[in-house]
Image 1 (cartoon, rainbow, N blue to C red):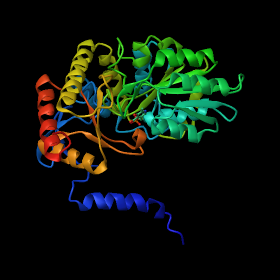
Image 2: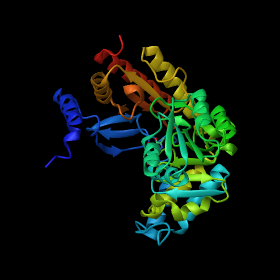
Image 3: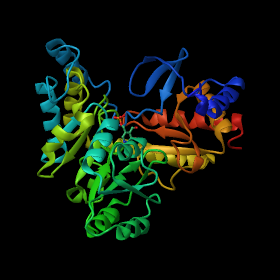
Image 4: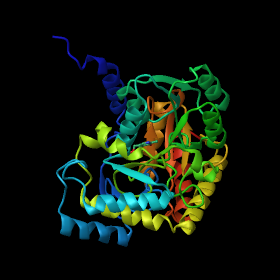
Length: 400
Ligand SMILES: Cc1ncc(COP(=O)(O)O)c(C=O)c1O
């Protein structure tokens, strides 16, 4: 018998070698208690959270929590069914209406996760004879959506407008084309030149899908994302998003103005063949989304945090993923996995949690310490964070 697990041996060995150095497993941390969107207890120590996707700090919002508790009491713990059978409650309709209102779009379809939203919409919209043209640094859920469908896949260099145009021009003129982009790329925290890319896509007869997972709630005047900030939201055919970041719970969605959009509810397998979200989750999501519509002050404070942290880290001598802060994500580039893990652990001992990211999730084989800021991080906390980076950086030799 061939052991089907033998293909994982190199990874098993790499992991064992790392743990043999005595380092805390960076991919197995337990949050013993979560006190707020910015503070948790890890290994018995107060830890500032700088590696969550809780950009707008909605997880402990009293209105959000009250809505969840009420729905749990009134509708029970789960729907035990698909959206197309017994799994659509008033709450699912209400959260879809909240999304339509938030984006000012005609249609909204809620999935059980953002991963499934990409999986479902991409694989269903782009079929056998069609082409998907996607940024090479796209999220795994986008690649998996491509793999699930039967379209031809045409990747192009990250954020390269000319490369996108060249690929589009090579595809037969009459073929169906879907260009898939992200507003914010989550590894380096850089944003896409959507204005130019959407224009090039439209000029070449392509439909456009933008994943705004990391920009919803924060970027753009109304928090609708990078497409809003760059003035092209009306030209985008599909926006994909998630409830697991700024919304502060779990779930995914697609919004669109396409007149035939609703047919997806019958033909999209990752929507049909899975249970719908629990009533408490959709109730928290709807309440959170409606509050995000009126969160200009929080958006402004989050930008301040992002600028302050970016400038401070740079001043300390760290190499960052972007020259300027472009989003709520600031990536600190580490020389290799060993140094990255050592720095990650040193930060944890200081009382700071960040995300350690490594290939294949990262571009160009990079090891990153990804910092994601929250609108509820105070100015003092950002100062504390910089102090911890200074101490850990010197202790590990990452900075002098
Ligand atoms: C760009 C992007 N799209 C989609 C997803 C999936 O979101 P979810 O956590 O809701 O499955 C993520 C999650 O990290 C993401 O970064």
